Image 1 (cartoon, rainbow, N blue to C red):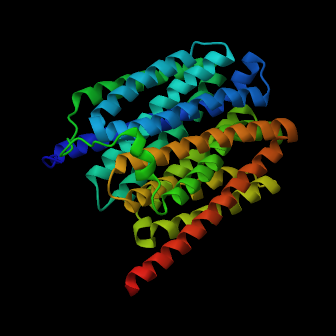
Image 2 (image 1 turned 135 degrees about the vertical axis):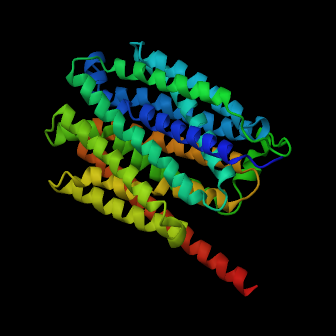
Image 3 (image 1 turned 60 degrees about the horizontal axis):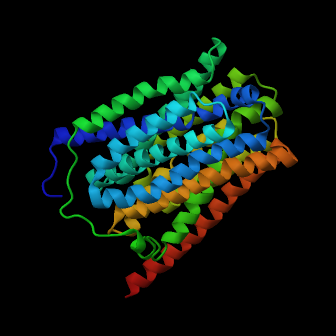
Amino acid sequence: MKTSPSKTAIFLLTALSFFAFFIFGGTDNLKGPTLPALIAELNLDYGSSGNIFLGVYIGFLVASLLAGVFADRFGLKVVFVSAGVILALGVGGYSFFNTPFLLSLSLFVVGFGMGGLELGATAVIVNLYHRQKGLYLNLLSVMHGLGSALAPIFVGYLLTAGFSWRVAYRWDLLFIALFFAASLALRFPQAEEKNSLDFRAVSKVAFKHSLPLYYAIILFYVSAEIGLSSWMVVYLKEMRGMSEAASANFLALFFGLIMLGRFIGGFLVRSVGYLRAISVAIFFAAASLSIGIFTQATFFIPLTGLFLSIIFPTLAAAVSDAEHKNTNTILGVAFAFSSFGGMVGPWLTAWTSNFFGLQAGFILLLFFAVLTFSLVFILEQKSRRENLVAQNN
């Protein structure tokens, strides 16, 4: 940076980043509680509705790859302002269109905007809080959890009051407009020099050493979390006989526990260690989900959110520590794998449920969680060996 930002600038940029994640969480998790109403309105099966959801994660994947390189070359202000415009266009389209193709296209645009929000806000926090980024990334994700928790409650209220599911998306445009105005008004810290990295060099920069293993962990973890949040309302309604409003409240509880876990866990992960914290968290998440699926203790399904809570922001902190050059680009690739997982999880859950039933779809999500734990264990052992070699040398 040419100059260190003032305390006021740091506060305002941090607040804007937190607000970005609030919008990100709220927008992303409007789709789950509105899914039953969408299926009923358009007379869709599980597989077809899963195809519509593919759009948001394809858009997120593309944005993640582009946003990191653009942030390194043109600055974070460009990413923030562009994300606000693109997100507004996508949300507006999704709230009006009626055909599966146009709805999926709108979600592609929504995903593109959300990819910019996540990359931009994370990069701001990483740049502002070098020593405490694990803590602040978890606190940042608390805001994602808050938006995610409030979205199902808001949707449930609107549906109970007789409003269309589309109204929830139109309300979202107000928050996006506020974010866009704030992004235009604030001054972002400038890099010391423009990064000359081009797209052809991304593979050389972003796939060194243990980074591919980190990306695989992110992919399978996000497959489990997003698949669970996207289909929980439908699962609870169809398999456990809960009402639409009660199912939406359970989803809100899921995100509320994610928010609580990130708030508490943010103060613990640094002392425990990134990989150890992730390993313990995913173990208990898999155990909780198992109990919820295979017994009648339905409460354990949303309780899984408490254990999932710290995993993604802690992974982001660990990835940013793994390599210290071209951090925005590396984070962008990590988020691209995240978006691919977000695409694969709900889509495979949809088609597995379509052919074999919703119970089988949720068992698939449990498999993703177990696979995540296995990969974290491998990475942890690899890191220990590398540290021992470094100490002996």
